[in-house]
Length: 564
Image (cartoon, rainbow, N blue to C red; front, side, top):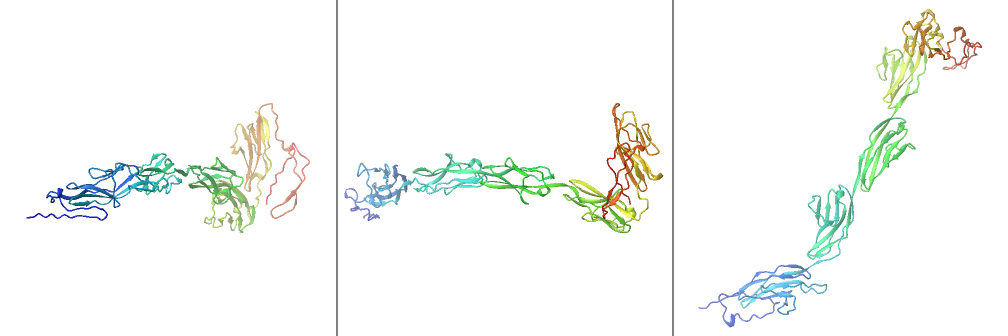
């Protein structure tokens, strides 16, 4: 019997060699225990730096032990076995070892596709192809980072494309020569971009893009990240209410980087010309404010990264004033009359009317009172219809607001009322006088008006009650007092009205000069009868001659009283 051994023989046209016959050692037939080569470990692709050592592994099994040869790009590789000076060595294991990788601009003898071939007399085995590439990292960045300016709180992005290289370089970053860590959740690195969300002032600095591969690192030119701060209002202007002619300050304090500029404006128009100034670069002061200065004042703060505004209202209060005074009126019974009362002020004052001596107040829009005869319009006019004699008297218009109050009054006389309407006339009233301490003074109050006249006295506005050891009221109305300084007023009342006359009593220590009121017989004589000229509806001109008998003192003024 014969043993037949079938062996698959691989061949490749680009590996020139002669197999010969399939005989064993010394021409004998193949042994049973012999086996053709088999690649146990294929070489792996390599990327190596220029000048660095490198190894392409290749292990083969077979019996007898296969011989190993290497091929590059189809050409047999020369090793130290062929040339002792070669930088390539074939190791006993079959691996190809490079003492250093040779690589130049024009010559690249070590870069290529390598194949390991194992042979024995039973055949050959070919490994998979393995590439050997030389790593490269150029110097010039395809895109270097640029300076970036952001506002604090905004995201910042620095972009970088590293130099060309093989393998493709990875990108990292340095800030002020310290590696930037992604442990900070605000920091992200992706595709050559450095992204910082919610930037802080502390993120500012000089940033360098670092391109790296196995060749080494390349640093870009530095780029500056500037983190500015938007303007932030530290003190805002507040609404203000002031009186007319006062001074008002609006504050506007801001922080920011770079230092913000501050501008003021008035929403309703220009700032008051000649009556404002900007203090400390930020704050607005208004002088002698007027009602027309009211409005909204806005502070605008701005720098290169932001802008902010704040506004405040100014209200200017003006005390009420009477713009149109009511005029005294004479009306016939049964007619209607209207009193005007125009007012100004800010805020606009409330207006109401009151008859002197009455507790009743009359307001605009109020339902008609007094049997529907009294009414006040929304503009403040008082109308009385179907006037009666008892409507005669003074009517007071009062304007009131938070800024103050003012009043004015006018007289209404209704013809057809009771006769004898002339109030009592004081013929001689108390005169100003100075007396020595301890002396007795007499203050005169002599009137025309008959027995129905009632005379009373007031001192400094307070009514004097009855006789006292220091005070005696005589039957003729004269007040006799032991010296007591003050303003004494004689008040004369009757059914037709009331009159008053005041005089100042001054008490001095003994030895002082004393002036007493002139006796009645020393009073100056009355002037001649007045001459009436230039009579109009509302005015009359009077002229008269003084009396040559001046009495105890010269006449300095006259009092005119008119009665109907």
